[in-house]
Image 1: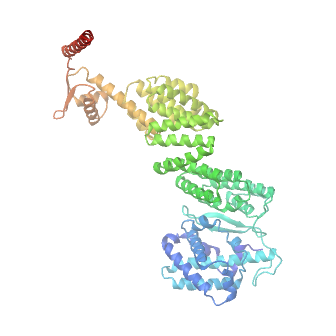
Image 2 (image 1 turned 60 degrees about the horizontal axis):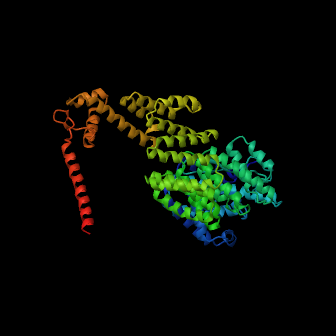
Image 3 (image 1 turned 120 degrees about the vertical axis):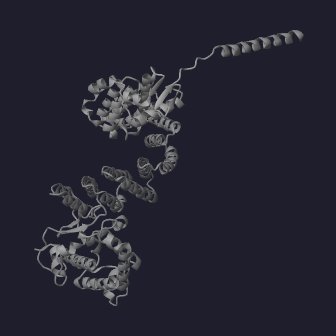
Length: 613
């Protein structure tokens, strides 16, 4: 018994390792896009000018331009370039796409004849690359011939000449697709010798669950989706298959395959209700979001889905995908584009009165304006979100998000006590849901305690509420609280260095700690220079344990801000402090007396005017 791969090797005379030697080199990077376009153009010019009617008739259903584009996009994708074919046409599925055509030995040889001539006429391809590609094409051509024999056997027709009459073995073929981000991505298609698709039943799902590898399970599930059945039971099974495929692809971090899955499923979406379509689309986008470093892919995917939903007039889904896109653009700091998208979306959603979505959009708008440092608009958008939320039931996670944003805005206004209460509410909501944002809410609670000069409460809060959240986030706040309680700038700077990711890279914490550090530094400097009228800057720097340049810069700033009266003698490196000039009280008293006399004269003038009248 032979598999399709074995038959292809036997009939083509090309070993599997030679056929797939194209994967050892990135031919797309080596040859470039234009080379593949030239090759496909030359090839199909010869095909459409072929003298044999039977051969030309195979390609009669497509134009030459479409055939050229399909081929060069597939070549580019297969040989290390971007997935042009999958983005436009969906899954390559070679045997499935060639099933309607008579792919015989004679047709394969004719195809290879034209391809050989096209290679001979293309001077941009070196000998080694040409050998690799021709081996792959010859092997693949006979792989499709073997697939054609399989189709004929299943239909009870005689196999192609030179075919093998023995029964087919269950192990199929694994067609190899290269993705742009990795050398090789396996298991895009695995074809059982008995049929090209599996029945859409629970047994097929069980078969996928029992697969030894994720790749094998993905292959089985793809074959379930290939089944043309559209009964209610089949559709239900396919929905489950889609969910499982999404999970498996996410576990393997195959973002581009998830994107291709969404493209492939578009015909399927026409068979199911719009609500289920929305659920599937959002689920796949969520799966892509869980893949590390996939922000650019998410943005591109959301833009594609917005265009598709607009063409399909799926308003409900489009609005939610646009909201997701705006959030991604904001995270990527594309503030202008995000704001433009949100401004139109807000008007549309308010007109439809979809309050649940409106809460999300208003909240997102508040975050966006806060990122742009437009505090009044951020507060206005948050107020709109609260107003919409009060009219409906809001899930606890969303309510926690509103409270978290409220705390951030109040902290920005230095109202740390009110901010603390909002952060506490957000922490309680997220903690009950085991949401990872709980630790950030707790972190901001501790920040508020430090900012209102209650750093001693930090340890108590952590021991009573946050034992399960112990980690670098809370360790950072404990270090800051300890430095503040001891009024030690050295400990403060050590904490900033040791916990840079938790303090400096968190924009909210960083903004407030910068203010706290400046205040602490000014207080310490004022305390140290108070006994002196003239003191070396180096001495002050040694007392406060900071670099001389840092201290000198801060002292000059304090003098300009009139924190104290003095001057810096940089020639000798000294600070000269002047006594605060005593204000002479006689001048204000004189001015006040003159003002009172003016009031008396005005009063007498008014009275005399009345008497004379």
